[in-house]
Image (cartoon, rainbow, N blue to C red; front, side, top):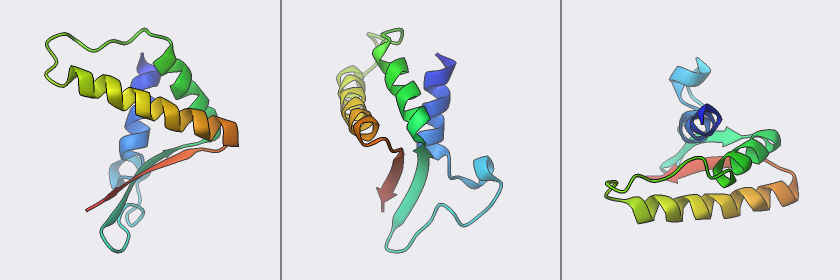
Length: 94
């Protein structure tokens, strides 16, 4: 499951100064923050890792339904990226 964790970490924090070693890639104008990206090969790897079923949400997790729902939405985005043969970029607005 290290592939799953590594790719999720790259998607959520890949453009940080700690990961890139450079500053200025993360913050844009108007409150836009670029978090991370995956190329088209990594999109396929992450989709396969999620669909493998080797991960599960613990029963004591207070947001267990939310985690499952978030993974379903992420899979939908990954399928679209695979059809278009492109990567994905995760961003946030403040």
